[in-house]
Image (cartoon, rainbow, N blue to C red; front, side):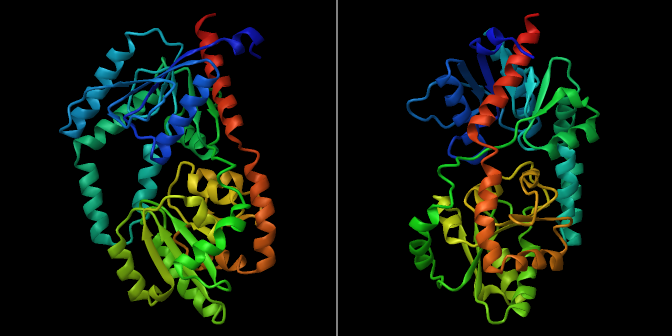
Length: 399
């Protein structure tokens, strides 16, 4: 156990990440975490290549120059230049997120590359596209550079602790790299529990549904993701065929938000005969309003280190269907608030899992249960868990 004076000591902290774009999900987390740490009296610096400056920041941002092309040289130039920039300071904690080796804490927010690649190829159904992707990946120097860097990150004596954002990521690190379990600490992802809340239904539900042209008596399924194939949109569109057959008298719609190849999947929906009850919106803001308007959140992903949209949906009181290849599935402990798919490509199982929540009483119960689950993963617990790791590493460095 750490001594009280060690835990209360103010730290000098560096974050090292390739892109710093607080308007996006992953980078937004580090903007928020940096502000929280600064507000607690710690000195925070961010080292990055691409910067989206936000006014009134409580921390310092350092832009790292890199070679843009080819991508393999871009990776190496970031490794070299970020390490050189960090050496100019005396940091207690160097929190590495992307492709860096200059760190004493590693936090692979995107998960384990080898685990991701396995599932990436599992999501491809077209054999010709599979071959194309396979050759493009494994004939690319960039791939081998990425693999080399990630191996060095996990097998690195300078890295004292690895922070995994879910239990799945921790297990993948052990499985693929043989890292000792005691070196890895899970600090689970978190979302804004005030912004994403069941009470939003009272404020936004009717107005948003009216704007979308959704009747009060229709069920609204929600899918959100920026990579439609990897997130499982294809099996979800196929699952709609079963749902229409099983519930001929129950109107329902699928709302699809996020960046992706809309044209391809719109044609797929037309070919399957489900386009009349699917709605593609593309990128949207104010996601809390879409959760409020929806009844069931469906995320049959082939890989997610810990999906924020799943956590947001649960915090908003929606029953969630996702897969075991999503670290966020840790939150779902019974079918009272969600279902976990063994295989996201199993269309009939996916349809049955969605159909389970066509029952109004089950959806009402899920509003309470899902919210209760998420309250265990508050932003405060995330900051405190991160600081415990920091102080463990900083304390060990000074003994």
